[in-house]
Image (cartoon, rainbow, N blue to C red):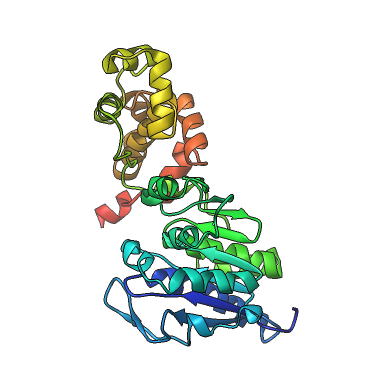
Length: 331
C-alpha cells in the first residue's frame, strides 16, 4: 500500500451536514499532499442515485458515483456522514442495503455524527461499541439495543468499525485513520497544517451547551433530575434524592440505571462539572470560588471530577476553551 492510493468512499445524502464530508476529506487530502505522490488517498463521493445532494445549509455537493455502483473490493474505507435530519435518510430504502454491500468489501467502515444511526439501521453495529453526537446517544441506544453506546468519546474503534461524535469529530477520526495508515509523524504534520490537536483532550461532553437530560423518564426520576440541574450546589446525597422522589435509595438507583443510564452520583457530578465549565468559559472567577459555588467543596475535588468527566483539569480547560479573553475585551 506504500505507493498505491487507498480509495475512501464518502456516503452523502440530502439534508446531511457537509462538514461531515468536507472536514475528513480535507485532512485526508492534506495527508496525500504531504506524501508527495507516494500513496495517500483517492476520495470519492457516493450518493443514493449518483446525483448531487443538497446539504442542511443549502449548499450542493457533487457526486462521483451512485452508491449502488461502488465496487466494494476497491474500497479501503467507507465513511458515512450524518446530520440533525437523520430520519429523512433513514427512510431512504437504498441506503441500508448499499451500506451493507460496500461495507462487506471495505477494509474498514466509519461514521461521523449521526451517521452511526445509518450504520446501526443497516445492522453494521450489532454487537459492537459505538458513539455518535452527544444529543443522539440515547436515541441510538433506544432504537438499537444490540449496540453498546459509549456516549462521551470523540471516536470509538471496535474492530474494523470506527464511529465518531459530532461533525468536527470527523476530523479527529481522519487524523486517527492517517496515523493508523501512515504513522504518527504524518498525522502530526497534518495536525500542524490544519491547526488541530493530534488528540483532542477530553470527551465530547466538554463541547455540549448543557448536559442533555433524558426525555423519556418517569415522574420521580424527572423531578430529581430537574432539581439537580436547577441547583448544582445543593445537597444531592442519595438519601436526600430518594426522599425527594419518595422511593427507597435502592429503588432510585435502579430507576436511574434503567431510565437515565447512569447513577445518581455520576449525574450530580456531571451537572456540577457542566455548571463549573460554563463559569470557566464566561468569567474570570477564581477556580476556588467556582468550586464552592458549584458544590464541589474544594478545588481538588473539582479537579478530580473534571479529569473524570472531561479528561482535562479546570485550569487547562479555561486556557483551552475560554470563549473570550480579557485582552480582547479591552481592545
